[in-house]
Image (cartoon, rainbow, N blue to C red):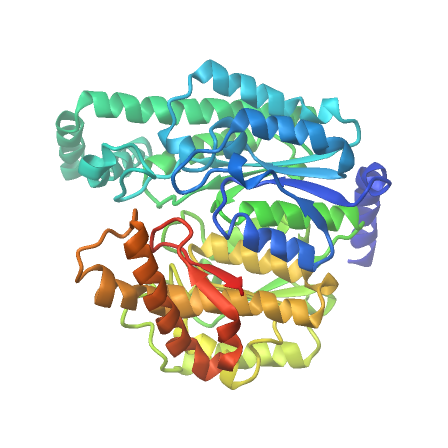
Length: 517
């Protein structure tokens, strides 16, 4: 193992020797201005001592506006010479953001020109490291404008089902009854809807394929492609399978392709940091009892074990089985039966069962042995495991962790916990505790608790929308959310929660911004 590590470290040194001579500034273009993509990610890097510079916020996509690709390119090109690396979202630079990648009206030639401009960025700035992340368009079961084209409001579930059946047909796993169902859907969904749907998806695939040339030529030092909300059978899974064929022909040391989207920016920033510091961290992954790594989580089409392995490589680390030699242990909380329910489910209560108690003891034992432990809480989708968080606080383990993540999809949680965990060695105890507090307040207090209570007691009784809240509704919701978070978190976190404010940055209930006052 020591020989292997030295050989790989030497390779890393050769790759990074030019970058290290430059000023330690990294330019970062997020896919939009949501906290997970912008504030939380930048705060994580700056806590580790990195000077991460981002474009003016008015150039980034927001809840109501798309980003400005041309000006983002100009900002990158104007500032590249002052940095050692660029980490950039191709969705922001080609379309104007993640949502815009699904809803835009941009002609294909314009997308192709922007893709080529991104590929040429490294040639324009010799020695600059360029890391790019992209996404394959998701296949939502139900959604609507403004995050999808307007026709999803009427046809969203049928579109999803048609894609799932098309996927099954191509895999030769479709039943006779489903063949008839597929024919009915093809006839029922308006042809103009289908034409627009497939044209958009084809343009996305075409632009992504052009970006692959940057991997092949070495103009991208690394590229991540995320599968955003990809069910086991879906149009996104179908496209991802075909994309995977192309990816497998490229050097594995320069590209990875796996489930998730919002964690990709921090993963690549973590990779840039390890490379620029001539490091090759070794990561051991361990799971809760039961199905463990064989769990196939909601919204994803890979097992947790496969996803964890791919995330470790993408973050610039190396997975190992021998825990003794690991620089970081990634402890993954999985459901015993391998079924990831929603965090809002009644099963997500505060009863500490045998599995949770056993997993908590494992984490405690690892910490007591002096290991750095990052905890990815993927037992439930869209929020933390209440019983686990309760156990962590009661056992006084919550702030001993290197990192914690349990906020959305399994890939999101894995990626965030892993990246923050890899950065933890450069983070002070006070800064690490601050990052952990934000995650507990967001992933646990809000997403697993206050969000559903707010729906049940405020949003739904008033017949308010889940997204697109007006100013008055948003203000009332934020006040209610603040009270609920304080009610949930204070017994465990004390008066520290009064140091934070809680807002809905996109005027919707999906995410909250946890910000220190």
